[in-house]
Length: 413
Image (cartoon, rainbow, N blue to C red):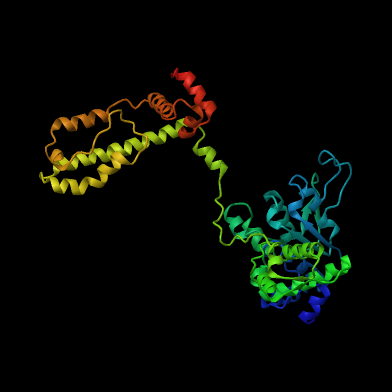
């Protein structure tokens, strides 16, 4: 059958190569029993292709059952797909046939397949490989002859790497892949779809259809359409109902288009679990401070050792050590030394005595008690914020309640 006739039969609008290629693949694979995986963004019209595959197959007179896997709760999806025995769980008052039993010799369309729980993925894999399944609460193996067509807007290979989707199931489903292009890559189809939707809504609401001037048409084509065909249909309906004028210009159309996100910075993903692990207690923050102190002291030791090995040329010492000295004394806002040490000039460095080196060693040997450092940091934070616990707690990276408990525990005035 010609592609154009298939479009008319299933209400498909568009003439781009990607769309025609997807229809051609669906028709070619229909006579076989191969599994098909349809991928594409949400709203691209993936749900039409399982119907094409079913209608052009030898199973067209058997049941066709679409199932939205993302809309079924995890606790009941096994029962929905494979059925259950009476008393299998609370509320199972009678035996129930699942979709795979009802659709025997027919086709099941599993939409949002990426949302399936891992336990259900194992059951589905067995059906695809052997045609066998077991009802929930039963030990009896049942057989079914079902063609599976799946669809997803999730990046399945990425989910496989993250351990959210079984790799063997992915390859079993992806025997024949069909990719649905987003609407922004089908620019020539956008206005055709708009006219079709405008005509449909004009008939439904008994009003003249919308018309767009050239500027509005160009704006329509250049918009990114993150919601794809579904978003275009929704906006066309809004304009059809709200606007009194049937001739729409670019300015009027712009009012209905949400701000495009193409010039915005990407949203920063925040992993709450990692944050909880990194800052599960204020002690871990203090540990990090101590590690930084240790690193700085190691750098300071290296500086002193270099000074001792120098031939005495003050200019060479200043040149080689200037960056390290600046780091040691300028980098950290939280100064843990009560008497700040000024950066010495080159002459003073050259004339350094062993006593200076011994003072550095004394600093290294001072108490590194975690409790003492904790008290010291809390006091400094309170002094910095003039006793305001809220801001001191924020500076320390702990809650105000925890800070209050520490103040009470250490009897800090």
